[in-house]
Length: 314
Ligand code: UDP
Ligand code: MG
Image (cartoon, rainbow, N blue to C red; front, top):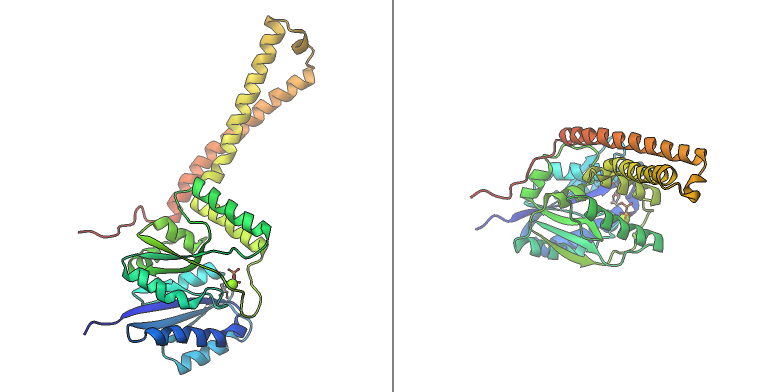
């Protein structure tokens, strides 16, 4: 008989005590329906929860040997919690599921099916971007900028609700960068991927811990982490200012002293001084851009990301 494959379900939980009971019921339905085909392990990472989360998960671990608890000493953020999950799971594939059950857990079966069809990464894409106009626009803008300025290709609406194969987990665990957006790194890696579209549900209980400010911060660190373009902006701006102000200076000089144009001759000395100053601001900004190129190189070296990702060698 063939050994059953192991699927790891990884759940970061920060003050989710209200949701743990429901989570257990729902996840067990999924596991029970597939327990003849697969083995399952559930890893819940309590990310410095200050409520009853840890005690509740401890109870689960006691009554069900599939359940495991990783308890952080303080809140490190969801990205780090999911990384801890990936580093400590043993599955042939791992899937992230939020503790608030916003991701429809019954779809896990479809994720596994797509994985069995040969996909290394199966990404859940959220159909209805619940939230107001601002957050919808923000998310659209985020993906179009990210796809334009970096090597990472992400589909708009991509979520953490995704299954990755053991090869991808092992590669991901080699990444040493601290400031990380796990799903960005997975998208950066490539691999054969497929998508499952789903509608996110309302949170079961408790409050979301990602507010607008936190999301903006996450977006900025994605840009900075996955692209060097922001660093180069100063340089481009400097070059632009330098070129426009030199053209203006040449036009003024030629107009004034060679063609003796009346209008240009009436431009005051102060205005000309301003343009000269602008020229030097341009020079300074382009020098900053030059320095940023060196910083970019240093950044690339210190993140120590693997040079390439091998899918297989025959
Ligand atoms: N989470 C975490 N650490 C944090 C914030 C959130 O582990 O600092 C977990 C949280 O318990 C949930 C998941 O990450 O399981 C998603 O968080 P949330 O529902 O607050 O955000 P959403 O993505 O739904 O806006
Ligand atoms: Mg949520």
